[in-house]
Image (cartoon, rainbow, N blue to C red; front, side, top):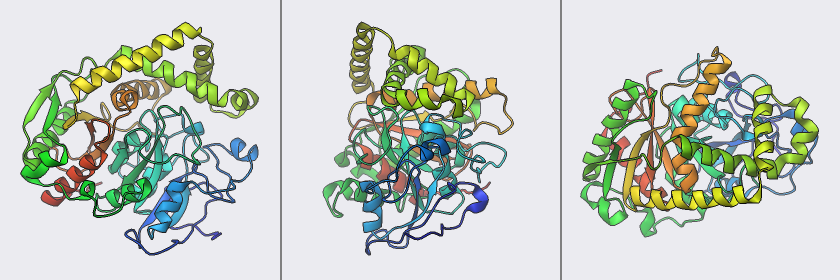
Length: 422
């Protein structure tokens, strides 16, 4: 095992025992460097799961996660193992191991979590792409905070073998990149899709319909506390996307998908799964956890103690939500949504402000999480042009439309100037 990681020490994005590994062969990702969130198994390495206590209480991995191996077999080289929030249970990016990762796009703000180090490494140029995970926004949110692309795929599309779970029915393996170029090849490699299949053909203009896209949708209303700049950016990107793909721009009523009752349903389902997965370790090691994480885990414990009738009712609620999602976002639809109501959280933010950030953010991330649907964060400027670092717009589609979203991003970036102002 190579013991020297790549560049990026000034980003504080690597775990203390990070390392680098070369490619296993040549391939479509030759020359591409990738970072890995430190909850993916790598043989001989002990994952931190965001906390030194986890590392101290677990043995090294015996095998390597298939997602990591797939990238190396495609010619990519591992640059380093990236930090994450404790137990991958945060969307802020401030409660991991050691100093929080640096946000190159906005140095006075956090990276977002929980895939904080992965996003920092890509945004800062230490890696070309990165593996992360997304349960309640842990790829989409850091991508928006750091001004990069971030894909939460359809649930189960990417192999999660060898990846530490948070809440398995919501957990997804996701990807980061600064530009679309390496993103789709990386997706294809991790999913095992051979190049040249019909699904991998480029998407362009009026041919969009044959590739599964039929319309771009804008919300009729935006959730409370969404800033004016965010609304303008979302609208601007939706107009560009519809024009570039030759699709109609329509409006969607999202009241059945975005709201307090849906967020609370997601929180109950997620919390019970977290406690089912980690109750024993959390109970034995609660003293080592950040106070904020510990408080939310206590809520997980309380919700897990609910009667079985409550669990069944919430599973029925999830099924009903997915039926609603299928009506509002049918196959072929792409809905443009904010990923964040406003900007990334300030490093000096008070606890109340961080709590508000979590609340507004999870409200926006709930649709993809509850529906198991793909969502691609595209960084745009205030006018909606791609590549900017002002706002992250989440392009939401029906399950199975992952590649359509990636191809749409390729078209956007090929037709409009990429703005990289910091």
